[in-house]
Picture (cartoon, rainbow, N blue to C red):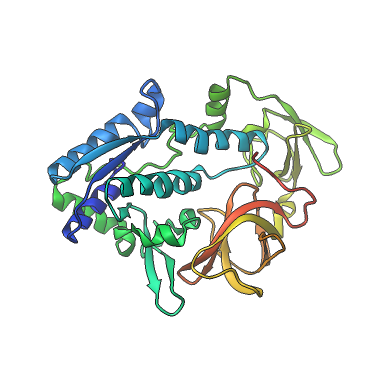
Length: 360
């Protein structure tokens, strides 16, 4: 229970369904981290809201201290990624390592069989295949299946998403009906440990090191200007470059080994193929043949038609029917068959690149 309206309504719906529930809030920041405590979606004020909701329903409530695990598994990985010219999605790592790993372990230690979260997604069991399947949430504007592709069959078997069949407006209405203190509370939009959205400033503060300026270059290596440190940029970025030109420049590559950022034109950021590692086939077994699907390469991007095939070693090549903008190392590619999530993995490179990106 984060203290937001979604997890609060989730708790109420689980109790109404007859479950014997325990509320759990994950403390991800040390008490001295004022910015996180006051502004983020995981603040002490949010924990107090969660406790108030749980108390109002007569539900036991615990605060679970995961500050060290969160720092090591999410924050430090986030920092290393940007330092290596990679654009990560920390929400995926938080789901992977904390909410559906540590939290599930904690639930079992408390004698619970199931965890329930406020994600907008659905789970069903396919009798024919004998597998649990992850489906999109009914509310397309809120669907969070993209950040849940890493779930395992074991985790799906012990997870419930009560909001998957609801629209956000219905959730708000239920919260008001229940009389929750957070019924009208605004949704969090930013990364929880970067509440002001300035990830570069966070990285500099976290590491105690200022980003080193370097050169913007074109694909021939001609210097076009100076950048303010690679942690401030991502593939496909157009705004904030400060390069005067009759046609806009876009970032095509970030080269941490030389501290250079390569710029090109709009057509230069469109690619048709990518390679993904650490691929998790979720709703289906690992396919032995090529398969047709749609794929999403960023959370807010639209799906695009593609063909996927498993390569030696388990990595996956995704070939799009039409070139896609800004295929970005560190982001996830998630494959869909209609509403069903087939699987997903971390983009390590565009298939035309020779190098493979790493966050290690």
